[in-house]
Image (tube, rainbow, N blue to C red; front, side, top):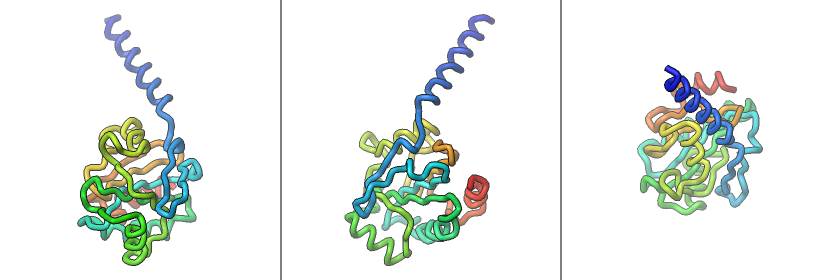
Amino acid sequence: MKKILIILLMFSFFSKLSAVNNGTAYNYEFNGINGDLIKLSQFKGKVIVVVNVASRCGYTPQYEALQSLWTKYENKNLIILGVPTNNFRQEPGTNKEIKDFCETNFGITFPMTEKIDVIGRNSHPFYKWAREDYGIGAIPKWNFHKIIVGKNGKVVKTFSSITNPSSKKFLNLIEDLI
């Protein structure tokens, strides 16, 4: 019985230790699609929706729902961050081409990063951190995977590509968090 108690205490200690050292999303920054620097620390106290995006994906129409979400909640502590990636071979364009496509076809005004890797050993440090903070559910399996970061800078929930940002379950979570 003592051995079991000691083992449980050890695991409890180590899990708390790793969570304390894991940091928050506010430790990360991205190069913006316009050449600016996007520091997540500038969004402290806000809910951040980080979405890996692509222009040649079956889920590309979700840009419209993301823009609607941004328009409705941008002044209510919500940030949408689009993260273009070609990891799934659906975003071959340059940063300028991506920006022009998003603005022309969907009127995108929310912040966008430059095109980066979101999976694999070359993935952006934010995505590596999100996996450590939340688990394998934070790893994008396809484009338009959504990572929701709460006001405390920690991952609250993730949504797969099939969940549209206009869905009731997505919107209910956002409204609860903001």
